[in-house]
Length: 192
Image 1 (cartoon, rainbow, N blue to C red):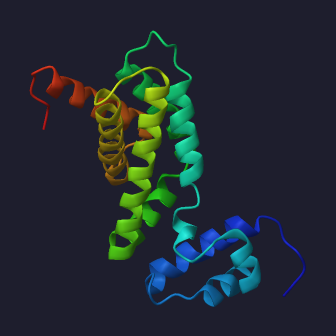
Image 2: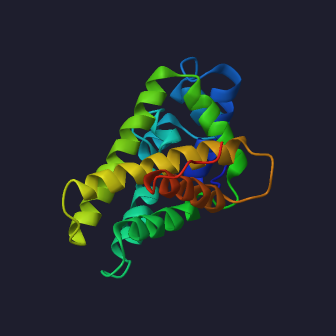
């Protein structure tokens, strides 16, 4: 190993994403990831529990931003407005990261285990958002339904954002998806 360089966690994440894209997730070992990053396996395991977590390392921050955005809205705000605040706050994770998000999503889409892990993380996000809504006094089933709607809006908006060729930010896509959901629930017809 050479002399110390900063941002071991970031270098490991970038090395893993490169190798997963080149060879596939299943064919890549922790030793290869660490080697590509110029680090040891021991350093890898200081930062990540396993090679799958490299792709999901930011989910705690995403959840914190989303939940704090929901919880931080005035108590007089409607549940959907609190949800909107949470979605807006969560966008901070993705600022200037569209290319990374695209590459990460391609790796996840190519592997069943990773797709299942993604769904588990989204279910955890929904449960946390529902807890935040209940903490604001929203009863059931409204808290759970609103949280699930928020995750659905996030999934659809995120997929459209990474597929888009324009310069709009994730927040624009989330607002558009949320507006479509509002139109549907108001008895209107969503645009194709």
